[in-house]
Length: 269
Image (tube, rainbow, N blue to C red; front, side, top):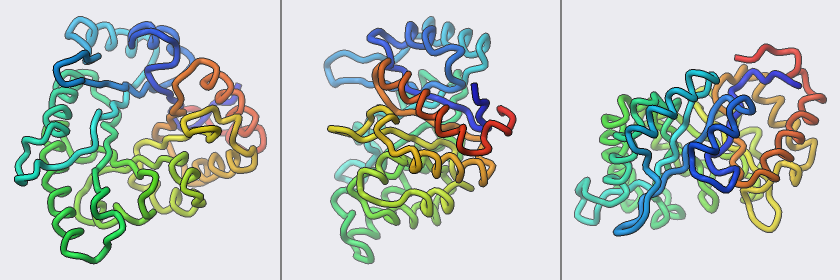
């Protein structure tokens, strides 16, 4: 089996069970697990208890796992410009219950839908100021801005978040699947972003996104892996799928793609 130079990961919902059984299943198969956490208003949530967090820490220690945490909502300030928006309050609760896991990164979305097609406008400048405030606050909760990884989203211009990265020293999460979904070539974007990138998401497209990498053209997958190798990327590559079939077939596709690169000559981090 190929030893990748990056940390191979996937999500915490691969088998139809809660997080801990998924971690037991994934231990030894990946080096990082993206924790998908949710909290429904006046409803269920899957935020781990202190006892569950202790067990998660033990699994990580035994198997050399790290965790990335995907914050549950697109971050934004409240309409009055305060920090009371639900997305920020839920982000804080997620961070507080997972911080002892020392996550590799907190992956997050920035809600810019209202201005995503309005560059160089006063509305965009206001949004940029509010994004800065949101990130600074969440970065304090997370223990440092570098722990935050802002993800590129489908349906947004490829350069939409660049002013954010110029102003705030957060990290990046490059979602290759979102770029493919928008019909964009991810290679140039990836090369530019990698120096600030802690996490890369990858997934195939079929009737929807977040499907197996077996739906990706082999030459497209090989090209992405080769950019990661050439850039000496040692962060996390998360296969962002949500079923055992998609996960296992994605691993097979990665292995086959790696045979056509020099990745198998690199050491595992």
